Image (cartoon, rainbow, N blue to C red; front, side, top):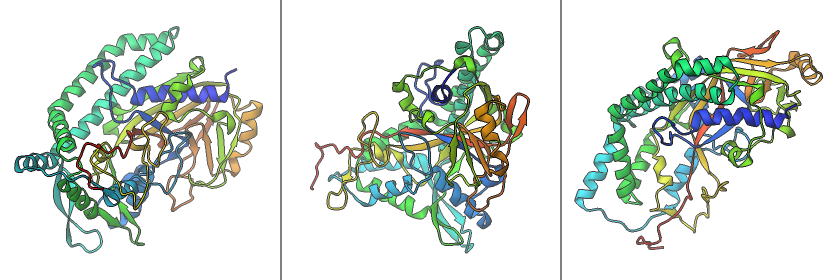
Length: 461
């Protein structure tokens, strides 16, 4: 019988490979993050909690809650957990507590830098949600928005193709998996190619050229630093109770509706796929560790942040079926490439902070940041609820507002403003079904060594 650790690591590994692995069709790294921070269990979330905007004052609390959630700095080892460590705080510290070399751009270089910046960012006026007065904020240009949206469409198509391929490779004796790969593999392969072509026609080359120019010319320069500070200051938002946050979006909007149904990947894993995972590969998603806590988690509170009690599962999972989608995040208020910039270092008179030492596994205050949510829905968990271990946990269900199994939430609540049961499961002869949406993890970008100042530059201190 497989151990809980083997079961959970096998599940995480397969999801990781589908969400962040390379593109075998174009023979390139897919990008968008090479690390996954999984939740244990997932965080239930509804469409109502995700429908917020700049200009709706009634939705500011929801926008602030979402920003706090997705801007949390994940730990590199272990699982995602709520914390006060936020990516925007470290970004602000880079801008405010650093020193830079003396670098002077000539007129032509300043022009190139500004044109590159304006390829990605524009200034727009919107009504203030509280006063109604017009205010200026930075926003992505239409070209950059199209680039990001078509990148998302490409990742969706790639996930669907890779999930089908993974099933065929992992289950060579499964006639259904082999037939699906034979019949649908070429179709989905063509979809990936078409989505890549749409991405290219949607500005991929122009955007990435602009990004390269900013990296080349912006290294520690006053022009770049001044623009980053101005964008950050203008982006500051305040809720009705005076809490500050930075508006963070996801795309596409309403990814859960019928119009986006084909973007979801049908993911499955059978008992036969459970195996011993190489620890060297498990570092890409925080490692295992499930055996020490138990796959079942229950709590009297529906809030994700509350402490949960863990129980052992019998490990006899017959299979998992679920729909997954990778939902990219958009932060118009920051330039993440600054963490790769070698034209700055922290002022030693203020701090000795190390964001990342660039090692593997890395150490530091912010070794990675979330680039996308991994959202699940329509879960079917094949599990024998009559076994001794599972039946013991089942006796806790009626008194538990929060129930989870591995990375999946079966009952609970995302919003911190209510304790109502907005997400629940049903027991069937085959196991457990849970239709509601939930965040089961975050795709993350790993930082290089940061700061990593280029000592050949003209440093004055």
